[in-house]
Image 1 (cartoon, helix red, strand yellow):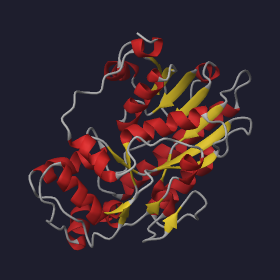
Image 2 (cartoon, rainbow, N blue to C red):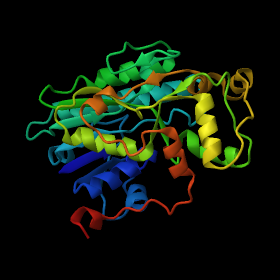
Image 3 (spheres, one colour):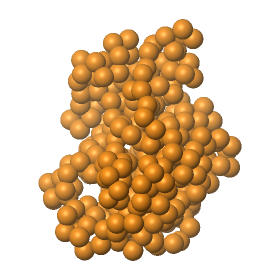
Image 4 (cartoon, rainbow, N blue to C red):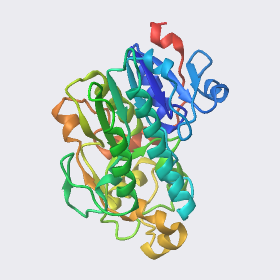
Length: 318
């Protein structure tokens, strides 16, 4: 199976390529910078140039693949949320998805069978302790608005193409996301709950994100939204305790909400808002989570590990 991937050089993308190669698939990367992508991912990875926000995805490439996994988008936590940055976050998702879907819809020959177009649990907004699943209504706020607009573009894809919109939670991994920033602090004994600590965190190990994307790719009964989160969301206080235990350090230094808001501005919603999201679609279809509880996930990620390695030989069993 040939699978086109956008956002392949990002935090999740590298793990996705590793998972696809192990499954015997052939990744085909769409990227702004082919040379940089091949340096990052390996010279044997097929890569083609595409600027998601300014042009249609290359149709010859799309005609040559069986499926597309679309992850490209400006990082939510890259910078403070100025109006300029918020526009960049929105446009990178809406315009990129629009240009991909328009290209898919205009294909005259063979079309990919599946489009997996990323979204996020920001869709649900700040919901306290409410238990949320794929049927739950959207919330309010900037992230919810972004996710709604993002998914709306994906849903314009031709009905002959199976669409899955994974709503990705807080991704835990050593190389990126929240944990990359938290690990050094907690290892020094300076970690602890944020705000009240009662807000829910719907987390997922980065390897399970990649695993779920491949699972959805192969499971044709999965359509529409799919929450990409672990089955056991935890409060921020519980998460902090588990991370402290994983690094063998105390975790009782609280960060008051007002200090977080002062330091992060509007971006503080990422750590102060509460979302208790369950992966009902994944569980109903039998996805076997590698890391179902937060302590096991954090213990795994707290270990010293060798860098992620990928090779085309993996795809051929070499």
